[in-house]
Length: 447
Ligand SMILES: *[C@@H]1O[C@H](CO)[C@@H](O)[C@H](O)[C@H]1NC(C)=O
Ligand SMILES: *[C@@H]1O[C@H](CO)[C@@H](O)[C@H](O)[C@H]1NC(C)=O
Ligand SMILES: *[C@@H]1O[C@H](CO)[C@@H](O)[C@H](O)[C@H]1NC(C)=O
Ligand SMILES: *[C@@H]1O[C@H](CO)[C@@H](O)[C@H](O)[C@H]1NC(C)=O
Image 1 (cartoon, rainbow, N blue to C red):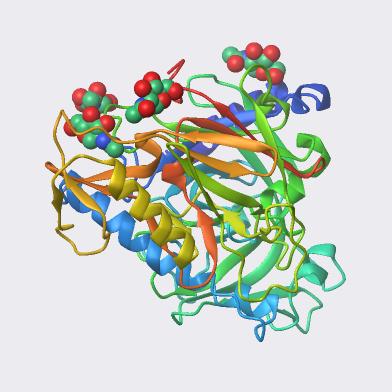
Image 2: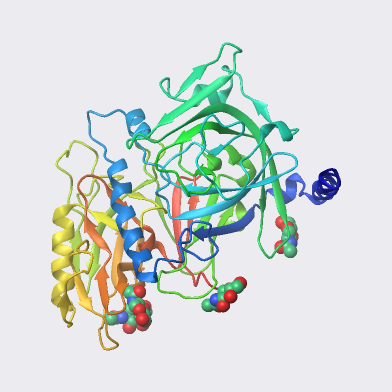
């Protein structure tokens, strides 16, 4: 019986290989789903939580994620990477590993680089719903040597060389979670849901984790790093996707079976009316996508982004430090410097005619009784060269049936433009041009 299944499977794979795109087609890229971890489509979906508990959890995750970004001048970029708290991202993506391809679900993380998945034989693996990847069953799996580019790209304290000259990695995270195993190369295949197209990429380096523990439980099969460093999926796909990827995130408030999308390659090319672009700022660590936010407007008041205490860095005409904010898909809230935040929240308070109430979970500090007559303001985020209108959907979150809260918070350390603020924009990262572009889009369109 099992033999027949394997036979049928390999037939299927062979036919997939036949229809797999040529290089020309690959250049057009591919699109796949970004499954919100709290969507019923997600294996992390917890039906016992009500909708509001899910919202509150994702708000809390924002804060634990933020602590991982803590950058201080005394900490080297590599320390930051090793302080990463895993699996705090909000979206999952399907990836098919190996030959024949085996489905895995990775947490998508624009705040880290390494791609890793749990692998058999496990010394220690956390429970995952999908079968754990078994490299012995794949004909394209190859352990990387210590001289490989991937191995060289690892930080000295994250990589080591085995006696057989194979590369091993270990990532220890701030909360004592860790993953370790072989650095290997494998064929990655992506499928477009409802489209039937598949795109395969050979020799993608990843961590085949045989010893994984900590706070990963129930959190997919591993992580898919989409950061700017050399080991991320985006960097590895490189020229075959023209250095471009984009996503379109569906607002929290939208109900129904819609999924957010992620595009790799020119398919994601953002063009046409309403597109605005801003420059990516090269800063350390290269993993993070730094932008320059000059200020935020509300009504006719423009609030400058207060420059940091470390003012030695280059500033622009508005006195904003270049690269003063990270754009991240995995953080729900937007984090601003305390001064900027307090000025902004005071202005928001002055404009809104509504009944202030306490956040039931005491996390957000500007909340109102939700009602049909409550008018929430539009804001504009002024990135250098790119003004982005933020609708109430981008700046407020319903935290319960009758309470709506401002989704911006003061940052202890680093500022982050979070995913609520990015909803209903097609956001494109062009690593070759060094830009991020935004196009207002109804992300449920065409589903
Ligand atoms: C599959 O990909 C090709 C090339 O990118 C494209 O022309 C075609 O429209 C796609 N098919 C579907 C059903 O999306
Ligand atoms: C979503 O899809 C599931 C099954 O695929 C269905 O049972 C459910 O009613 C759908 N929900 C909505 C809001 O359309
Ligand atoms: C916000 O902007 C939208 C469209 O840009 C407009 O329809 C709406 O009236 C604005 N809301 C307020 C409160 O100004
Ligand atoms: C809050 O929920 C109401 C419907 O219950 C919706 O109309 C509104 O857009 C939501 N507000 C935000 C900011 O998501």
